[in-house]
Amino acid sequence: RRFARPLIAGVRRPGFPRGNHMIKSLLYISYPVLGLLVAISFTAYAWGWFEDAALNLGTEIVGILLTVFLIDIVIRRHEENERAKYKRVAFQQLRIPIRRHFSLLFGLYKASVPEVSARPISTPSELFDGDYFEQLRQFDFSKDAPTAPKQPWMDYLAHETQQFKDSLSRTLEKYAIYLPPETVDLIESLLNSSFLSFLVQLPSIRRLDQTEGYRRSYTMLSANGMTDMLREHTDLFKRLASEYEHSVSNGTLSLSDDPWRNDVAPKIGSARVGA
Figure 1 (cartoon, rainbow, N blue to C red):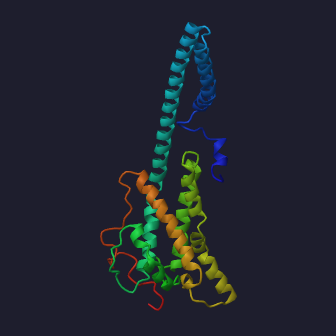
Figure 2 (figure 1 turned 60 degrees about the horizontal axis):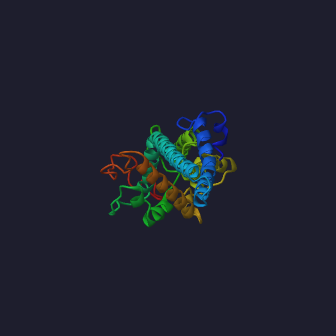
Figure 3 (figure 1 turned 60 degrees about the vertical axis):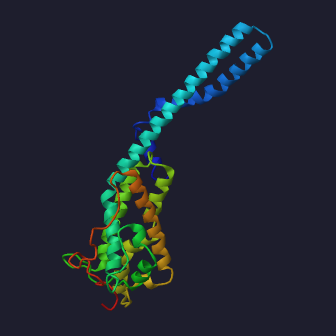
């Protein structure tokens, strides 16, 4: 994996010492060897060859085989517990970035709608429905973001998005060798999200327009294909939020009790085209 490879040579794996892997290798080799010896012993006993010795040997080997099996179970459980622990630590470090990004995605919606939505919105699954993608088609990136000093949404979003990506990257670089492959794939997919890349590039697009004297409407999310790009990103984020909630105690991801308050930035419809 892109992030895991440079770490493996230089980072010792807590909880997964080299001795454990050597023991597991020996255990896997011992299974067929011990099984073969058991078969030979009981075959010899059945044919009447050295009956007492064959029976005693077979019984001893069965006992050894059971001991090997139990040791294997203990090692597996230890490694599973260690993986769960490091996954929990990784997602605890992502707690603030995940919550901040969720708040940002809701802020885009709040700044796009003409009025308070009647539907209940608290969790990612409740936020990202058909109306979310329809309303964001009206979002004007050139409008002022809720910051002091003032700056356009495109600059604010580029900064916030880069911070989110940096947090994902740092966590992945630190914990990739401990996380399940599907979790690593998910975080890498978010890092490569086309929507996040688009947000980071917004200031460059504006500077290029200024240099070339090109005037355009900055409602880019109304263009063909942009809704699909946004939907792909929100699907990835919902999966990340779900993993976070299952990995961290008290990790429920939800908005504040009254996210529609107009004294909490952004204001409703403040970035809607024509507002």
